[in-house]
Length: 517
Image (tube, rainbow, N blue to C red; front, side, top):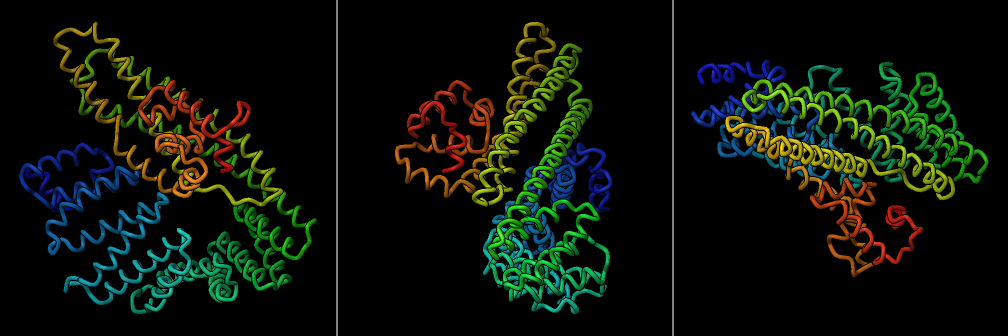
């Protein structure tokens, strides 16, 4: 205990966290036993930082919140820790696309800044206030609350950055981020006149710095869109050309794609439909190419993450569960199951990608006629989360079946270890917390969809509405059954009853119908 306490007091645990999380777990346990609050708080904080680096956002938030609950018992003494932990949680929510929760956290921080301890300098308070107000505005911008976003961003702009930053480069970078968000907010609102000064200021900064050609290309595109909104079409075309020239020369395909779409809209507004269709077609060709690249990157990332999870699990087993895995037969079976499930997972994901690719081709034809809105990023994030929960549940179920099959071959001495292994799998792979978060996200993104279902089909039950939302996400019967903890047969029966209530014939695709609805 003395060594752990000394390590915490010297901030030495931060050097250990990347090597072995078991040290931090031991620090938490012993800190609780000896009522060492500071060690408990810091260990959870470092574990949160560790899981951020591992891209496990939900686990990071869990550790930050645990530390925060302990700190709140000693509010005055730990004001600074409370503030920065809330800030970290808010930033993680923002990175996950959960902008409302991030905004609410930053609003809590604004209230805390009205009661700052006396040891904080006025300069530091100004810096925290400006940053927090700007973050509230940024989240409001992502949520589409444009008036709210502009109000907060203008408040942040009123705080003079010269009073905060001693380093001129840091000050300019902070100011330009604020200017960029203000310009974007006015552009999304369709107010080209108000957006233009901010866009021009940001463009001048990017041209002067000559550091980020991609941002320079984006700024030219933004300025072109301002001119489009102001109906200065010739100026718009000139800036579109500059944006495309930079992005094509440097391989910024995503910038080129967006500029093609804006060019199509501009030609369309002038009634010049031939070039409008030409650039719209270029937009979709480039979009398909970029999506194909992203799909491959996602598959590669999943493969790396899968291998990383297996390696991390093996390290934990070797360090913490040596007594559980004593027989070579158990170890061989568990490893084989992991490999087979990994292969099945990748095959299933490739099948899913192939199916979605066909659907995207159909969506492209529809969008060429009707210029429908782009796919929702949050919907993709929820789909990914649902697939992760599904695969994790399948992994847990298959492992429990495998170890159940070898139970008759285990002698009395090994029974205790066998039961411990079963309990470990249930506790670590069958998580209800992730399911709860998924349900909250599904309800949030499908709120208007549920209202439409209730109005059009009032005889649908709550369970059937939830089934509709999972079908809309493109999940298979097997994946939905794993998420809802029922058999695939139950899901197939539910889909059959749902088809009858929706009055669909046997040839009509349920998923496509719900997507249109």
